[in-house]
Length: 289
Image 1 (tube, rainbow, N blue to C red):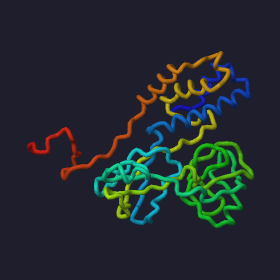
Image 2: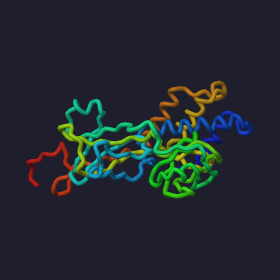
Image 3: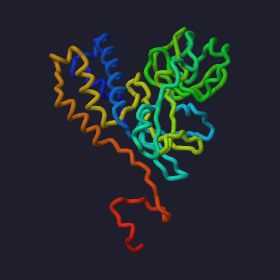
Image 4: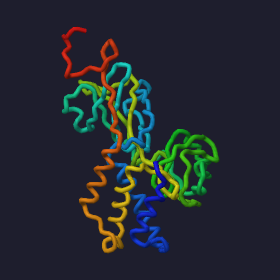
């Protein structure tokens, strides 16, 4: 990991923008946008947290909530039965014929709670809201989105001041909007078997990649392998670069492919035999053991 300020400095140098406050502001805005856009593309190694365990034996017919900061799923795995669930859609679940599947859906068009009186400081790990306190909603363990800022923060307390992680490094917020368990990004998961019946008898581990922490300060960290593609995508999105430092699609594709090569692919879990060895379609099951 390297400080993102190194890449910002490269961009500013290419555009002679270091003393142009307005242009530097646009560079940072575009840089954050492209960062989130790239992170949404594929499963990046630095965005994979520990898997979340969902206990469907405690779920009803509507399934269980996934983390609000989830960008994509690498694998859904039932370790007890050594079963992988493949993804389908709710519409295709009746027709695709696979044995064990899951699908995701948006269960609501309402946040768990939304307010308009957010009080949040820069470099903070807590916020306050009189509306949230008065409402009595317990936000502990839920994700919050602050105003129009990118990224999600996990709340870790039930009472004010409400604590969260990771640290918020964005601009100060007073009397601003916020959303807890934002409905647009918080899906539920349903498990089904070969007969399309919903499964409520097991726990599964969900391996996923998440939204990154937003970049605000030069010392905020990004993977070294993303530096070049971030630089080029940011330049491509800045009007002044069209004349001063044009970026071709070939340059973008090359830099992106280099980042993909450096990214460590997710290694899926696989069923094992009684000797705790992974099954292999290339081996002979009748050979001497």
